[in-house]
Image (cartoon, rainbow, N blue to C red):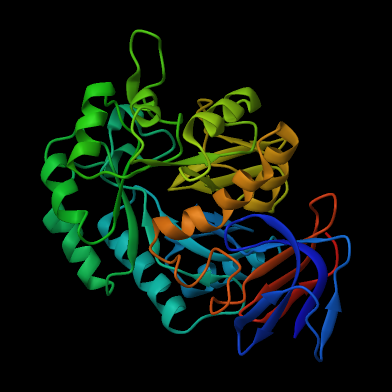
Length: 379
């Protein structure tokens, strides 16, 4: 199969005019003027790598913490239509048995893939967080970081955890970071840590920050907070929710400019209400009220999002963030955070043929997963 006559982001994320030849689920060749059978003309379009969402709880009425294969499979089927070709189902701060059940369901989907986006491992957002910054997480299940407990969970699911969140000021956090960092990415999240505590956590081995600005100490000119520590440390990558609601567009522009194109990761952090009408929903055992697409608990606390990576890409381009940085932040940067950049995240011969074709308005014209069209037609 050949995708012809489009502009595409090459392996260095330069926008060039070239064709893509696909064979056996892989990208065979990227060059101008390719010829062969099964040609698809995408004149006027742009081809990007498939989007990678490494922080997503749920969508279309289902959630990772349902703990069932069917729920994760339904997520996979919905996400592919929005250009997400790989994702990490994300757990909440729930009971340990519920986390184990969710991990088992995700492992099943990795070993026996359902139709749609590929499950690339699991993101554990809880339970090792700060009760003072729990946000929409359920307080009764919040606990101190325990590396032995985590290792049992990790071994029990066959090592599919790709990221785990902690509040580094909690008791046991230092040893947790140093030991668990050997197995997966450790992320600062839901934390009261000040600038100094965050910098010490980075020194110990934290390399990732969950939904920058949200549920952490903010940037003040005399108290830099966790946000200031992230800006000040080039070794740390930052997830950012880009729906324009969690973070003001002006702050998004500023953050993307300060962090640069290799340190920003777009995430949806979406919940089961994503892709559904407004109304009453649920997240981590708590009622959530969705109005105009904004999800909140009864007390007004923001509770996850109802967005998706494609919408966020469109948002950021509209907000004035450089297109090259936007695409990298939705593809190769998240792939690197879960150690999958050798297989996915960029358009290069030998990599998996996961592609998103978008028109001049950045609407999706086609989605290719493992060399096969999963969607063809504008949305």
